[in-house]
Image (cartoon, rainbow, N blue to C red; front, side, top):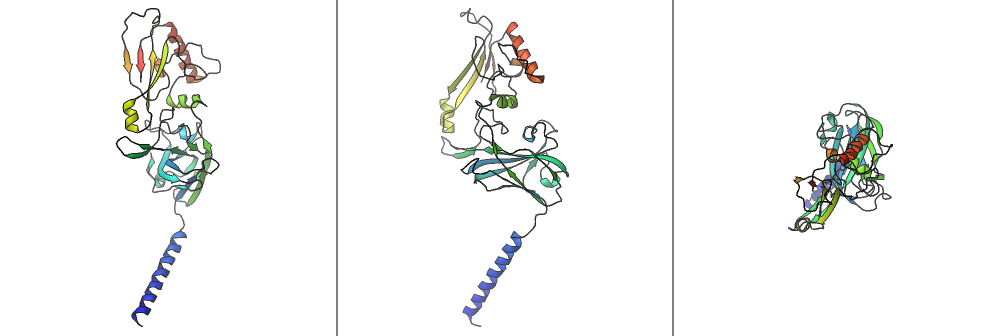
Length: 300
């Protein structure tokens, strides 16, 4: 056999081996659970950058996406994976190689029945003032909560049996989208632990509470887009009647609150009868504040 014929035979054998290996790889069966998460073009027609999150919860009250916490060992299970230009219909994969919390791998999740829900936290592209380009989740008025961030996609909770030792591929479709804060302010306020100065959760000024929002030149230059700072000012009773009086000032730096939260909750109207539980207690406490001395507070 001459050298040319030998070369042809070697090339043929190499191609055959490669084809057989590829066929073997594509026909290999899964040996553990695998989740394929996608969104239809009817929900979003363009590719999306972001972070896909898969939640496994032992109950559905509240929805699994609201049962994740880094501050308590009672947190339900979550896995996450970055996606870059994920196209409509293309699946993001969550499998045993995906990092999770509290269990680090799907292999470590006990077999059982779980409520399953997925969320796609959508990223924006930031062209920083220093020339760098980053993809990050912007705040959209909800306080950087991926569960309620406006525009984020999520799925309906689904109950299924999961066994890390059993091969199974679960398909999840992200067919729902979070509303804007203006469309449903109660969703963002409840997740952020904010009280809402009124039952409609509208941000309004009165003689005691003022809201300020201004553009920061330094932050705008850094982030490469208009960036704003906000503050909520709680004034003492009689402020308008005594313009020359001096008062002590308490300044507290905070993050993302749209209004005065928690112990500083303040409202000028009594709570409605529709409020229940903790919402009612916070509203009652906020309404009582109008009848006691008010400090001066500044929140940014």
